[in-house]
Length: 136
Image (tube, rainbow, N blue to C red; front, side, top):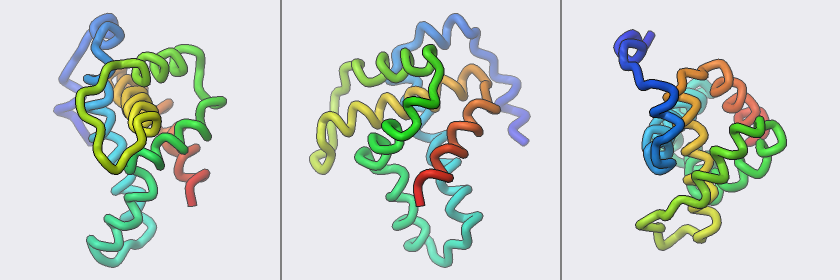
């Protein structure tokens, strides 16, 4: 499906050494694709309805809550990625977000980006299944 992306190769060692904000940067996009695809599959009628439903998944407080739910399902390596993402200095926190929620959301997006860049798609799918089964 994404043949071009398969041709892009980033060495595993380089991925592991990246700044967690880079993981979060790509993770935000990947997560958004999962959320939008999931919501469309559930039969949203208008773009407004789709947007309103996606907020349940993508706002900082929602991602913070999701992270709390899945933490016990994560490996030690994944929990270390979460810690690195949470502890990375961020430069801009939206006015409507609490600092802790924003840091945890960044950590969550970092995990998604990390798994994606390492092409661990099966694990990414597994984590997303936990999320979509748990958030109703």
